[in-house]
Amino acid sequence: MAGDASESSAAFPLDSPNWWPWRRAIEHVRHLRINHAIADQELATAINERDVRCKMDWLDSRAAPPKRVVTLLGDSFFAVFRIEPGWGKLLAVAQRPDARLPHDHVLYAWGPHIERIWPTAAPSEPAAEKAKPEPEAALDESAAAAATTAPSPTSGATPSLLEGPLHPLRHGGQIDRVYSALRKEFPPFGKAPESLSIERIAKKLSRHWKTERDEEGLDDPSPEVVRIAVNGLGRSDD
Image 1 (cartoon, rainbow, N blue to C red):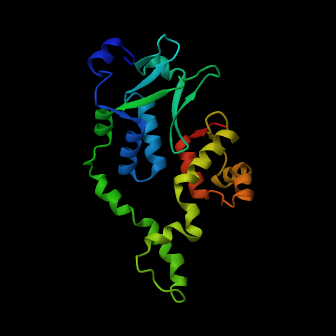
Image 2 (image 1 turned 90 degrees about the vertical axis):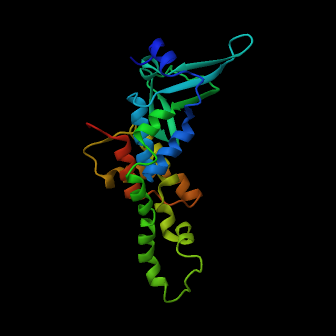
C-alpha cells in the first residue's frame, strides 16, 4: 500500500497544510512524553512502520531550470533508509553505502497522524506535567547539605538545575553523545550485544568521549543516560 499513486493523490495531497516539518512533529511528541529519548524513538518507529506518513520536498538542480520535487515516502524509500534518533533530531540512515538523499531536502510528517497517535488532550498529559518537578527531588538531596551554610535562592530551586554536579545528568546533549558513541562502537546501528551489561557498555563507550573529557572538561554521560540510549536503539543478538 505504501507509495501507491492513488493513495498519495487521494489521502495525502502533497501541498496540504496538514504536512508538518519534522521539527514540529518532534516538538509535539516531546511535549507530551517529556523524555526526549522516548519521544524521538516513538516517532521514529511510527514513521518506519508507516503509522505516520511522510513526504520529502527538494530542489532538483539537475533540471533546467531547477524545479521543486515532492514525493510521498513509500516502500522504495524505506527499503534504503531507516529513520533513527540522533543529534537531537531524526536522521534518515542509509542502509546501503551508495544511498544518498537530495542535498536541499526537507522532510514532513502528516499532522493528522501525529495528532491521532499523540493527541494533545491525552489523559497522560496532566501526569506528564506533574512529572516535570521530579528532577528537583534529586536536587533537594544534594542541596540539603548546603542549606545550613548557604542562603536559600530567592527565585526557587529551578536555577540550580543548570549548575553543580546535576548538570551532566540532564539528557539533552548527553544522550546525543551516547547515540553517536553507540553507532561507532557497534556499527552500523548502535545496537549493543544483549550479553553486555550497561556498566560494560558505558566502559566501552568511554574512549569515544576522551577528547571532550580532556579538552572540554565534559563529564561522561551517566549509566542511566547510557541505559536510556541503549533501550532506544535496541540490542543485538551478540
